[in-house]
Structures are given as C-alpha cells and as structure tokens.
Amino acid sequence: MITVLSGGTGTPKLLQGLKEIIGPAELNIIVNTLENDYFSGVYVSADIDTVLYTMADIINDEFWYGVKNDTFTTHERLKELGFDELLRIGDIDRATKIQKTQLMEKFGLKKACEIQAEKMGISSSIIPMSEQQSDIKIITDIGELEFHDFLIKHQSEPEVLDIKFSNVSPSDGVVESIKNSEAVILGPSNPITSILPILSLEGVRDALKDTYVIAVSPIIGSDSVSGPASKFMNALDIEVSSVGVASLYKNFLDNIVIDTQDSNLESRLNQIVNKVTITNTIMNNLDAKKNLAKIIIDSIP
Ligand code: GDP
Image (cartoon, rainbow, N blue to C red; front, side, top):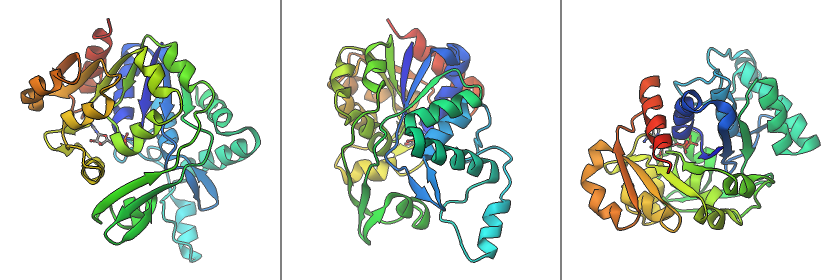
C-alpha cells in the first residue's frame, strides 16, 4: 500500500501514472480540504472532486477542475436569472456536488467520498484530510481575501503578504494510512496550501518520521509549474526552489524528486535529504506520468 498526499492539479497528474504502474487498489489518497466551502448552494470540495474524477478517468485535464465534456446549462440559466456563480460548475459536476452535500450532511465528508468513489468504480481509498471546516485567509496588498476570491475573482494577482489557516483534526484513517504504508508520496502539489495543511494535522508529522517519504517538487527553477505556489512561498519567506520545498519537509523526508533542469541543486539538497532523484518531472503526457511514477515506485527500498 502506498499513501499519496494530494492537492488538485500536480498530484492528480502523477496519480494517473501511479494508477497504471501499481494499480489503483494499492493507493490511499489523502486529499487537501483547506479550501472547501459552500458555493451556489452546494458543498464544493474541489481537490477531492478532482481526485475522484481523475481516478474515474473523467477529469477535465485541461483545467484539472470538473468533468471532461461537461455541459453548463444550469450555470448559463443561473446567469440569465441574475446569479453569476463565482465558480463555473458544469452540470455533471454539479450532480456530484449535490449528492456529496446531501451525503456529507447525513454521514460526514469521509463517508460521502467513500460512497461516491464506489459509485464511480474507484478502487483506491480517497480520504479527505479532515471532516472539519477550515478557515483560510490570503492576506494581500488589497486586504484579507477568501481563498477562492483571491484565486478566481482576483486571478491570483494581488501581492501576497501572508497566509493564515486554522488547524483542524485529521479524519479517521489519515494517520493509520501513513503508518501502515510501505511509503508515502508527497505529490507535486502546492506546498503551502495543499501539502502543509495535511502535514499540520495532529499525528501526521510523527507518523511520517517512521515511514519512507518521497516528495516530488512542484517547483522547477525558481517558479511553480502552474498556480500561485511561488507567490505563497515568497510570502512566507521560503526560498522558491526545490531546496525551499525540501526545507519544508526536512524532518521526515527520505527522498526528493527534482527536475533535470535543477540538477545544479543536488549538493545543496544532499545537506537536507538523504536521497536526491533527478529526472523529468514535467507531466505533459501519459508516458511522462508513467515514467515518473515508475521511478518513484522503483526508488522505494
Ligand atoms: P491546486 O489544488 O489546484 O492548487 O493544485 P495542487 O496543489 O495539486 O498543484 C499545484 C502545483 O502543481 C503547482 O505548484 C505546480 O507547480 C505543480 N504542478 C503542476 N503540474 C506539474 C507537473 O507536471 N510537474 C511538476 N513537477 N509539478 C506540477
């Protein structure tokens, strides 16, 4: 069994490769819930839905959000009625969210994900990092913003001064999954708003110390492959590089996977982490995803 810690873009790409290399039933995926909230009357757990759709092979992998070839009839009608949604939710995607909201309010988020994963024919275990509601604020030069307002309304443009999020408790199975796995993979997700929230859960860092941990860097050179990770790292005074990423994980990290473009960082990284694996980490097609997944799996002692 392998546990993967995931956000909603970089790690799902790797999951597509891992699924082919070791099979979905061998994967426990712990997913970030930091940005979950109600929108348009439904509960939106964007990273969880991206992981569900990825494992069900229906993800819109142009945006890593929503379902491939979805329609937007409800969204358009809402706009005609004068309600312009902040999140553009597709019809099939909305059905998933409506069901998840109902199930969650009855059984909790973890059980809701379990039921939906089963209905979608997914054999991996998809575990929300927490069943509690997080509170995240992006402190910017134009004031304190909600995460989605920063990301969508303001297109990640304001200067970021700080990021604050509340601590929540891990859902049942998070710590156990880490403890009982052969290895844990920290996927190439936003280190600040996708991975750090999972690491901050009680018991997670301690459990990681006793498990083989491999991280794939989401930073190549001095920038993120996509999204605001570099902006967030800068705001927290963390070097925007694979060295900065490794420094966040240094107390428990056994192996960091970096891109060939960053091979010059090897000696600096060797001072932080035992093993440095250098390979192509840009996952722009299925072969690249499978190659990276295979290198990761083969590196587990
Ligand atoms: P979010 O939840 O949508 O913010 O997505 P994640 O946190 O999962 O992922 C965002 C991170 O994925 C960004 O920091 C990107 O740099 C990283 N990323 C996206 N695609 C790739 C890729 O092909 N290779 C690597 N190494 N990182 C990637």
